[in-house]
Amino acid sequence: MSHHTRMSAQDTLDEIQRRVTAALPDASVQATGGGGHFTISVVSSQFEGLRTLARKRLVYSAITELMTGDDAPIHAVDRLDTNTP
Image 1 (cartoon, rainbow, N blue to C red):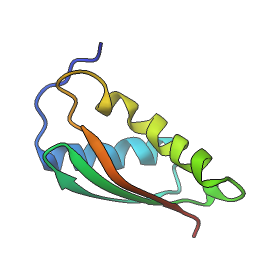
Image 2 (cartoon, helix red, strand yellow):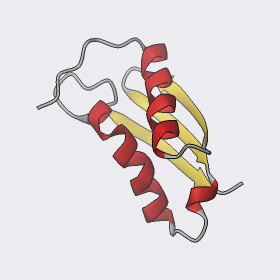
Image 3 (cartoon, rainbow, N blue to C red):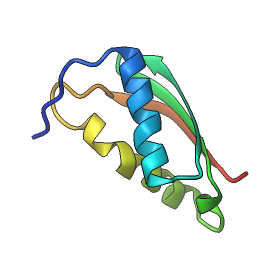
């Protein structure tokens, strides 16, 4: 089980951006939200040729740890957009 320190909404938004950019270095990441619910938009050339589900899996794999455990800072991703440039 993962253990999280309580993160503010801004800290969570910053961490989403950091983790997605680490996984997809060319990505442009926009994240909004708070209270455990977030909207994420990612634009990356690494999505080229991938179906929507494969694109979303890349993003979710980058933020999985933030969604794990009883005190996870991300309760839900209400919307996830994945596009190519």
